[in-house]
Image (cartoon, rainbow, N blue to C red; front, side):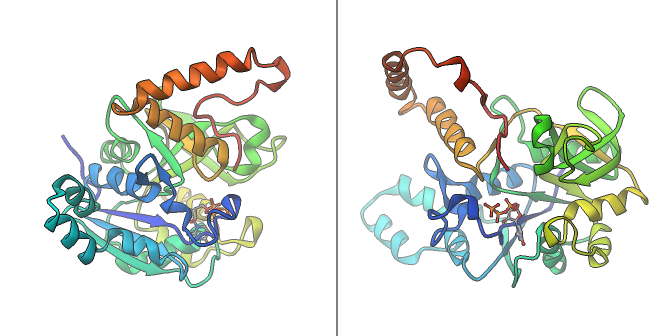
Length: 312
Ligand code: UTP
């Protein structure tokens, strides 16, 4: 059975400080991986999970995200008159006709939980999805992470949160969960805590930017006080949700790249470029040549591996 997740929320009203000065005038979500901005990859993942309502939570500096999904009359007319049909298709297909974008304002960056709460008027009852576009997840051999989670939610009920093991020293950068295993990819969550220090973290399973949440989360967010960093934390509202209903931590199929930091962003770009039919083979030759010329890496420099978050 194919499961649909009708509404997906994109909280994109953060300041993007880790990518300054690139994000001074350009929203982080419009930085491209290859020829598609992060927000487009995220929208495509949501649509593949069945979404027909995409709710973007923006601030006054993120108007360009609106423009990206709007019609571009002049550009389209020019492409049409010059017969550039392939380019015209690309410009028109930022959103398919059946998909409705909704833009909601978060007037002040008061945290991820507050951003999600701002989306409430645009979210219909029932479970809904959340994607943080800078957590870029590629599953080259199967459905996207959110589609997988929609399926899990349909089978088990409750809410579903994407997790992956993070390095113990990095627990203070993530929401961390612990619980009871259901199978090799799924765990019923017993506790969730925002940014614990490694010595008090209940596990090293870190929450990453995909959620399928029960609508009840909005009531709980209304009553959530500022937590870690003085922000209204989604994690704290999920902790309250756990006292009422089941929530599951899901280890998705696919690789996550933390595109909120430079290393993850470059890794995602290289991964997609190497897979690209047009430039992949040339890029591989270039990289191999560079690596040969550079010689072996000193052992002391070995630390990061492909797709594993190193900063947050
Ligand atoms: P981050 O912690 O990655 O913050 O937010 P950021 O502002 O995007 O980036 P840095 O850390 O300053 O470089 C996680 C997600 O929550 C959204 C962000 O846009 C991002 O998608 N967010 C965060 C909001 O929408 N509003 C907020 O008040 C805070």
